[in-house]
Length: 435
Image 1 (cartoon, one colour):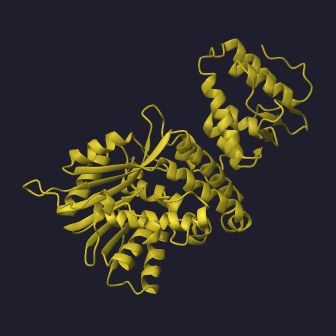
Image 2 (cartoon, rainbow, N blue to C red):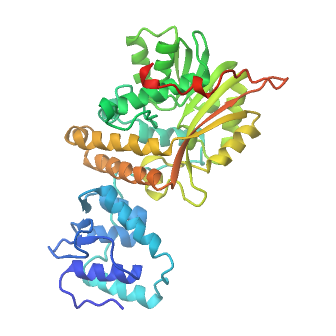
Image 3 (cartoon, one colour):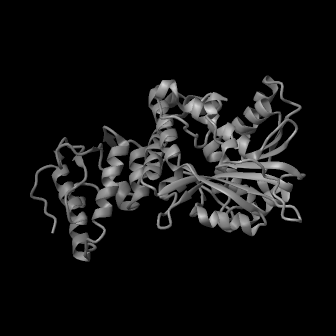
């Protein structure tokens, strides 16, 4: 049973935490009254006010913690990712501990009441997404995409590489080796995609979910492809159109601001979707796969780069749903392969790039911290803290294999079963950085 004999809020909270975990606390705690308790050397969690606990009382678990962190009521001194890792490891190890009894919960509530943590429900941060309408209706999807992607392009320019590639890079060398970094890894990813698709001058390419145009512009400039670039985010469409004009690519790149379900035309020789499929939804994915099949001519190729989750992992989670990618759905990669083949496509290659995302996110996080003041001035401190938490948690999820990312290459066979694929894997994987 928890007690209130220890002086100060921090010792009492550590006692409650150890009671809940049935073991040692993974963190040290400092509270608003200046008291501090917990294992020496553990990540230090700072509770700046009682409202941090109030967020957790009204919304227990991941979302309550996220709200407290985003508002600045809770902070972590030192490496945020290390703190998250320690907390998750302890929760996993305590999985067999008996659940708190009703008497335990009542006693804990009395302690929290004495600490002044019980009170009105705190207001959710402004950056929390608020959606309405039917799940994955066109209007709701447009609002969900706008919430995350319609930040100022200047923000993404501070975070990403010069090509503005907002997807996993392909690291052909260790980070930092001979100056190799994020710009080179993203260029190598774009080159790898173009080689897998067999692009050459005049190839008609459909880029579904083109983002800030990194692949569309690269495919047009380096390979002479004729690209239709599709995005649902207005800021992205305007940015890519401006880049097309500046680079004099009007004859090669056509930017469409529309839903993937409304893409006109078809008969493309190649199609690509880089980390857009996660936003499609579970029930809607067969229709997305059928659209990709329909847009291709026979022997046309499609490359899907998409995040996945482990068979027993939850995927995005409450924080991602509330702040980053509302209505996002991930599945194990094998299920995605089955859905693509169910649409009539023949899957020819699946490449896991999980470790590559660990490097990519680490580079984004380094850029976030290095440009912190400028990013805060652009977006506000709450949005900056959302991204700090997002990148720390995301990098950890890929490192611990709770999430993955894969490139899936498929083809629409012709009526005789011909794929049109020639060559070997060696044609795809020479040292891209030397090209």
